[in-house]
Each structure stands twice: as structure tokens, then as C-alpha cells.
Length: 186
Image (cartoon, rainbow, N blue to C red; front, side, top):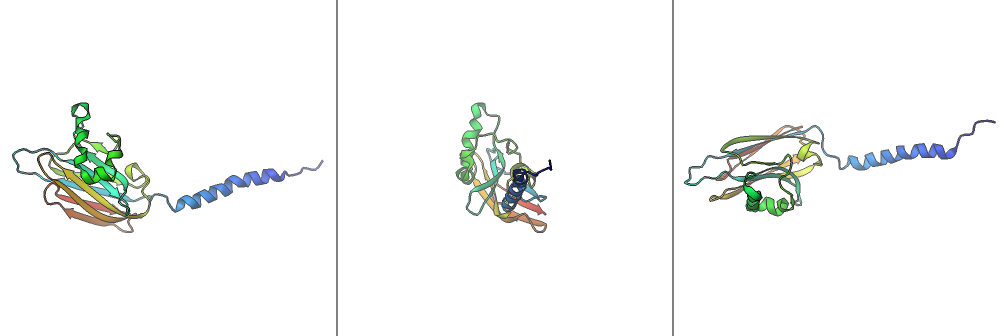
């Protein structure tokens, strides 16, 4: 009896391949950028005031629709009893309104203790951590600081992701923030 090839087995073996091609074409348009670096330097200035408290700080990436694309850092008083430090996060008004109030704190890899005066460096790689799902497009880096018995300040740096070439962007704060610099590498 000659061997007959079953036509259903041929179409079944093609279906996963066709499905895989269709899915890869669909996701190629929204896939996060790979291989790029985002390095952030935030200067917390030394202030000569009678009562100094370290600032609460939020750094996040905002989409064109002003929605939060990624939270990079939220520094607040983690050691207060009964999560008392979380109560003051709403003083970071723009971050709070844009999406901070929806987060369950602390956020792994994002939340941290307040920082002393000085320069603080944060490094991120495309496809990992907060940048894991960041698709190509136009964004704004926001850094907001608020201090008890002090002021509040928000700095914004627009940028394109992924960067086509190395870029160094910076903004100078007036009171609660010093220099905020953003280094992008393809």
C-alpha cells in the first residue's frame, strides 16, 4: 500500500509558522527599543536653611498624552512607622496626579530612601527594568522634588527614544533641584 500524505498534517504544521510570522510583524511595530542606555544625574542642592529636610523626589518618563510611560525613581522616607512616609508622596503633585496615586508603594526597583545633598546617578538599559516596555517615540523626562518646610520644583527634559545618536540634555533647577542631566546612548 503506497504511503499517502495526510493533507491536514501539512496545514497543521504551517499554521504555527504563519501565526508566528503574523505575530512578529504585529509586535515589531510596538516592540521596545533594544540596546539603548539612559543615564540620569540628579543634583540635590545643599541649602542653608534653619530646618532642613531631605526632599522627596520622583523621576518619571511621560508620553505625549502626559500619561506615565515609566517610573524611574521615587525617593521618600521609607523608615517611618506605619508607612507614614507614603502620606507625603502627594506633595509631589505632578507625579501624584499623573499616576503616583495608582501605585502600591514601595515599588521594587523604583522606590528608595531620600538622598542627601549631592549628585546622584541612575542608569537604565532598554528592555530591562523601568524601560522594559518603552516603545520608540517622543517623551519627556520629569524630575519633581518637594521638601517639608521647603518648596517644590519640577524640571522637564524632552527626548526621543531610542536615541539615533548620543545626546546630553540638562536643566538647571532654581531651588529644590540643582542640575538634572540626561545622557542617552544608542
